[in-house]
Length: 58
Image (cartoon, rainbow, N blue to C red; front, side):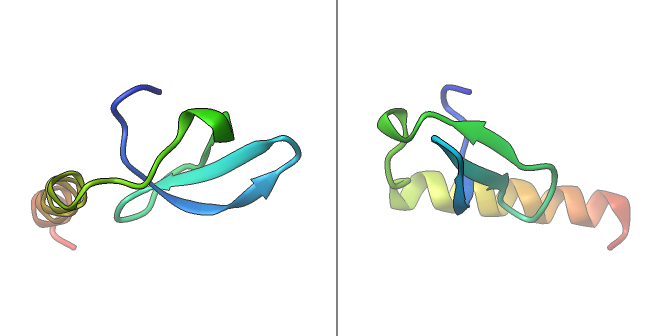
């Protein structure tokens, strides 16, 4: 999924397993297509996760 930020969880067969920042369902990604997130991307993903938690009352 292009443009999506996830936390690396490990390998599953030939794939990298990623999970959304703040939790959620894992997805598979081609290891050749992933890279470390920039500081701005990490910050944006963290703020989005915090906003979701606030709306859900968590």
